Image (tube, rainbow, N blue to C red; front, side, top):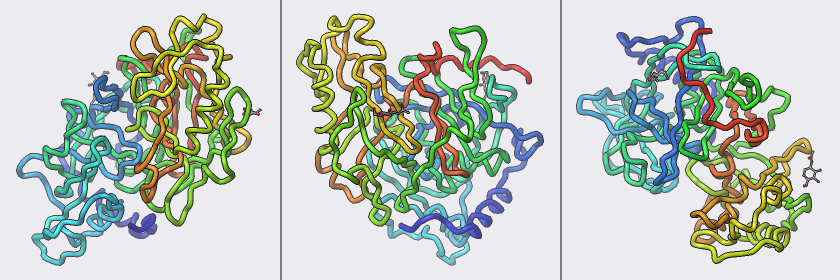
Length: 433
Ligand SMILES: *[C@@H]1O[C@H](CO)[C@@H](O)[C@H](O)[C@H]1NC(C)=O
Ligand SMILES: *[C@@H]1O[C@H](CO)[C@@H](O)[C@H](O)[C@H]1NC(C)=O
């Protein structure tokens, strides 16, 4: 596995993407004025994965760490020559767990009939497959950040996958939308195809409501309980740096410490750092991990501090996979409020990501609230590129989280409840701007 492509190979990819634009779609490719696109996000209650219906209405699973867009293909799908530089780019970030195939679709194969293969990866099952690199038509709506405006169709380079690779994904899902910072991810291709900013924002709902994703930057407006809708996108000055892991395309961010009720948890210096050489450690965002998962040394320190801070509340036996649970009746309105054992992730620039009860606890059945963090344990934490912390979706829910692939920064709104709204409040009625 090697690191980022050089700018010259990026330029080749971009020109190939243009060449491969399929004529005859209702394409708004490059049609001015270019606008960001919006798509609903649905949470699957069985797998707790999130999907966007961009493949002719068929859902693709959101994978923040994924390097490709992939789905099952039909007979007669388009293929890409092995000798094209696109084939090289598609195979540059080969998933560590995927064995190389001995069949012929490898990059650089000079046979003019050779169709390029790619290695789609299923983040839920950990399986990978092999499939033809192809051209996939996708669709969404243009947006002004307030509502959908008009439908937009565009093509991306994606990978075909065998039907079996859909295992462990939500029923009806057609594949995966990789959202990584790499050149063939969905946000990278939307930016080049639709000539919009190389950014995206996710608002994941915690319940059965429909969340929203916006690709291409701009405002992110939600209806609120206060008069009028409000924009929850974060300006450049409140963005924080992302950290690049040379071993993968996922989004890492710096955490300097963890505090429970403002008291810093004793964690060894450097325990949260990413080792740029090995790709091990660090704190990474994941849309395919439900509860934030901590390496054992960190988990043990945090859970000890949390138990101490909450010792007055009545415990009940935790059902697996949970570790600490409380009786629901132990919480009065005030105890469950902002004063309840906040967890601060201490970030760059003196900023904190403060996790309130809604993010640190999860309701399990009707009578229990459980600590919504998990112990990574072994062997996961011994894996070659195991992060120190995987920041999961329960903690990202009901926040607008933005990723800027150009500036390499991220932003977060904080829990939307504070503004009396939630991720289900994007207005999906078509409007005009
Ligand atoms: C555009 O938005 C409308 C209204 O929400 C929806 O019915 C339609 O399916 C969307 N089109 C695409 C291509 O996503
Ligand atoms: C961030 O969290 C730490 C630990 O709880 C606290 O000491 C510090 O005051 C917080 N900073 C801000 C700006 O809230």
